[in-house]
Amino acid sequence: MAPDSDDLLRAIGSAFGVSALDRRLEDGATFRDVQEVLVANLSPGTGEQRVTALASTRLKLAVTDVIGLATIEDDAPLRSIFPLRDRLWRWKRIADRSELILPQLSLPLSLSICGGIGAGTALASIVLWLDAGTGAAAGAAIAGVLAGVFIAGAIGPLRISFGDLATFEELVRVTTAANFGRLVAAGGAWDETEVWASLQRFVAERQGWPLHNVTPDARLDEDLGNE
Image (cartoon, rainbow, N blue to C red):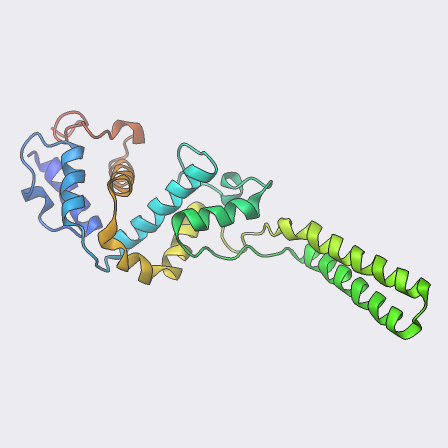
């Protein structure tokens, strides 16, 4: 293979934790051949790049499945990926789909205050009813409880803040740290879809090529300009 192709294969092997990848393939190899070698040789290990790549791939596949985005850039703002509507529901679906523990979405201060008002109204109404014991107090207590439940229910779906996280890359970093053990344990169970998605993105980002140019049948030393 050409020197540039050998360099690329060594970089792929390092990222995926598969040694001597450049010596496992013949001249004219395609990215499908690279994928097959990776699938056959991946085993549990602790390579940080590989674990991070697995977390990123799982998240991107889950987001694609749940939200329907075709591509997700690492520097994409989280607010542009996750629309405000049904954000909490989608967040939970992505956690289930990726089988990863995601950071908790936090409740903005203003909504926390509203929740506190709702809970306080309900509690005060109950205390008033217990103290007065009249029908009017009972009615006020019921109304207060209902108001508190309504406020709590209204703000529940609005747990929309990503806290200190701003981009998808930051989400991957935090998620990788929270799931490192399970990702290492699952390192040998990559399926072909995950391997290809991770390989395609790695090659495109490293070489500066459009993602759609990295196809399974593209030859390393010809189709992508590595001559």
